Amino acid sequence: MKNFKKISFFALVLGWIGQIITHIILSNLVANNAAGGETGMVIYWSSFFILIYYGLFILIPSKRIAGLSENIGILGFTLLSAIYAVIGFTILIGWLFLVSWIWFEVFLDAFICGLIFGLTFHLLWNKKRNELRQIHLLPIMTLPVLFLFIYLHALPRFFPAFAFNIVPKHVRHDIYKQTIPKFKVGDELSALQDALPGEFEFEGCYGRQGAQLDDFQYVIEVNCCKIVRIEYGPKQNTGFMISGKRLPCD
Image (cartoon, rainbow, N blue to C red; front, side, top):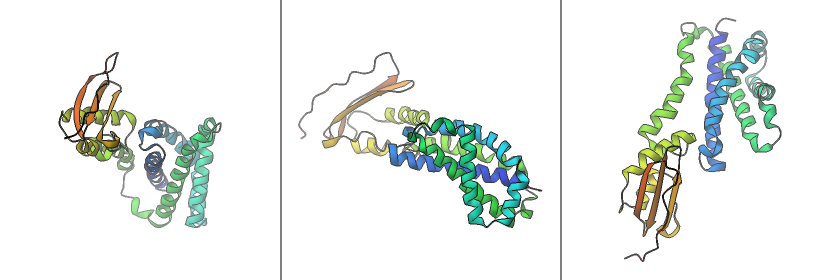
C-alpha cells in the first residue's frame, strides 16, 4: 500500500480540476458564461466536500480500491469509479439536489471527477507506482492551489478577454471594473465587444446598457457603432440614468 496516498490524492485532484473545467464548458453552453452556471459556488463547496469524500470513500477503503484496481481492467475500474463518486456525492450532499433536475450538472461534475480519478489511479497504481517514491506529497497538495491561482488571478490579469466568460461571477465583475475605464466616448463598439466578449451585442450598432455590480456601476450608450456615452464609478444607491436618442449616422 506504499504510495497509495500520493497516487489517490493526485488522481482526485486531477478529477476535481477536470470537473471544474467540464462545469465551465457546460455553463458556457447553457448560460453563455461560467458565472451563469454558479461556477464560484461549485468551486467553493466542491473543494470542501472533496476532502471529506477523500477521507471517507478513498482512504478508509484504500485496500479495497487498490485491490479492485489490480484485478479489474482500466475501462471497468474507471466507470466503476465514476459511479462510486456519484454515490458518494449523493450520500454527502447530493441528496439535497434530487428535488429538481435543474441541478443535474452537479451530478455530472461528480461523475467526471470519479471518471478522471479512476483512469488516473489505475494507470499510476499499476504502471508508475514505483516511480513515485521520490515524489513528496507536499508538491501534489499544492497543485489545486496552483490551478486556482492561474484560473482566478493570472488569467484574468493577463488575458481578461479570454477569461471573461470562463471565470466565476466575482472575478468577472473585477474584469468589468478593469476594462470599462479603458474606454472613452468615440471608441469603436467592436473594440469594446472584443474586450468583453458576449456583452454589448447591440443590433444595428445602437443600444444602451448599464448595471450595478458588487461595488461598481456603469452605463454605456452606443450609436453608429461608436460609444457616445460612458459613465462608471463606485456603486451608489441609485444607478446611472439610461437615456439617449438614436441619431442618424453620417
